[in-house]
Image (cartoon, rainbow over all chains, first blue to last red; front, side, top):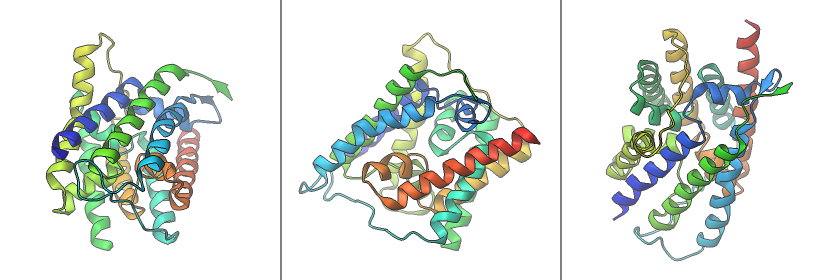
Length: 134
Length: 139
């Protein structure tokens, strides 16, 4: 059952990226371009998502167990160190360079665009290199 | 600064759907969604591999479903510079794996949990993203 949930949640997430146009790197770069012509849309996407996810998380986090899994798995790492900061700096630089973060990049594979494919393959290589360093 | 291309209604609607996906996944499967985590775990870890793969498949099916149900074409405008795409992709992959999260994992799931770590990560990647766009505009 949790496999079907995964598939459906992926679909809902992907449709959300299309409706909000976050699948379009130009739209994301428009948000990051605060000094010239600014497009605040991305902030509204985050607000929309947080309005739903925040109350649901706090309502359910102390429940015994999720419906289709044996336990809740909530990140416990609280360390604010070099890895967090440098990682976020690298990510921000790549994000600002192209306008893709992981979700929209993977989702955009559906549009059969060569640039998306090159970006996603490079991203997976990046995952792999970082996992070897950890 | 001028406000341009602002689409608050579709942004909010799409955001609500993304939040719904995060909420359902947590209530039913017990995990908080972070796309970089799901994608890199699929590559590296044997745990939940099928679930992670199916989530990524769903993510790719999303635009196809939208194409069937809506007459509106999906716009995508992206750099075609090979060097920029490889550099950008590698930085995004390396950085999100190193800091354990991306726009969804830190920006949505982490902030939902009021995680200080995620708030700091989100502020950092947003500021660096803004700075990067500023630099590329100047160059």
